[in-house]
Amino acid sequence: MLKNKLSQIKKEALAKIKATNSSKELENLRIQYLGKKSEFKKILRSIKDLASQEKKVIGPLANQIKENIEKTLQSRKEEIAEEKEKKEEWIDVTAPGKRNTLGHLHPLSIVQRDIEDIFVALGFEIADGPEIETEFYNFDAVNIPADHPGRDMQDTFWISQEKDRQPGSGIVLRTQTSSVQVRYMEKNKPPFRIIIPGRVFRNEATDASHEHTFHQFEVLVVGEKVNVANFLFVAEEFFTQFFQEKIKIRLRPSYFPFVEPGFEFDISCTSCGGKGCSVCQQTGWLEVGGAGMVHQNVFQTAGYPRNKYQGFAWGFGIERLAMMKYKIDDIRLFHSGDLRFIKQF
Ligand code: DAH
Image (cartoon, rainbow, N blue to C red; front, side, top):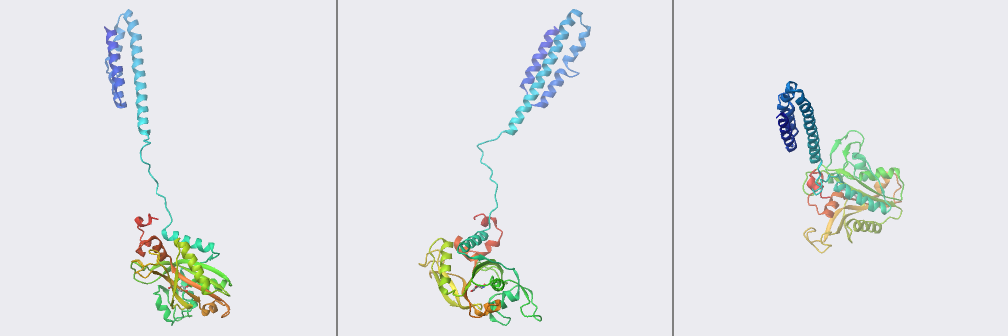
């Protein structure tokens, strides 16, 4: 009788343990079958009242069954834990990968580096100067004294305007990279060829083609026999390399205080190659910036003897060139911080 009951309990318990998938359920089963209030424990307690003949059979059998149930509980517990671990560790190798977004150079940095590379290959040195500049280097030194109308050509952010003190002692956010010309020449003797890339500032309203903060690169080549033909060669070579296509140059007479003669500098349209299109307003030419042969007054301020040297200089906007190269129609995009724009480069 008892024997049958015990094997019945064993059979039932093992079947349920094997069928469950939850460790919580396993614990319930342990309590149900081996706990203090279980049928099994009742039987164990009753063994002492059995006839000794029967005791010898039921005692070991009950122990065996208890061990068996415990072992099964234990191994099922381990199995469940293992299954759970496998499920959590499972990697779907067919799922699309998550890409990390990497940072990259700003389009202006890319273009500035391109420009520098071309000039370095042509034997130029890269020079720079401060963005917060004295009135002297920004204006006076490049032939724009205080009363000169040339000062009105550039709306200036003044940091201090010390009119009562020494002339040129005011402080400005530099309006042009031409401010570095005399700084460099004071420390270096010709012949030399340099480019001066850098940030400049204008106190102006902004629109699609004007920014209060933008970049220029100044080119300055000085020697005893530097002439306009050298200038044209360097310019054509630079633009052809920069746009990776043959570019033609056109000079128009213009005025800048630090050059004589001064030119407005145009290149053949990079959209239509010079045939005429909407980008160049059917003219075939795009205006790039100012240029000219360095004024002797500038050399004199730098401490060079008058009429000993000649040089050419230009100052072009880096944003403007970037806009032409990448067909960007609003200069304000560069400093907008708009990632949809930045990520395209
Ligand atoms: N500094 C001038 C500007 O910002 C540009 C310029 C014109 C620079 C003629 C030059 C030059 O070196 O020769 O408007």
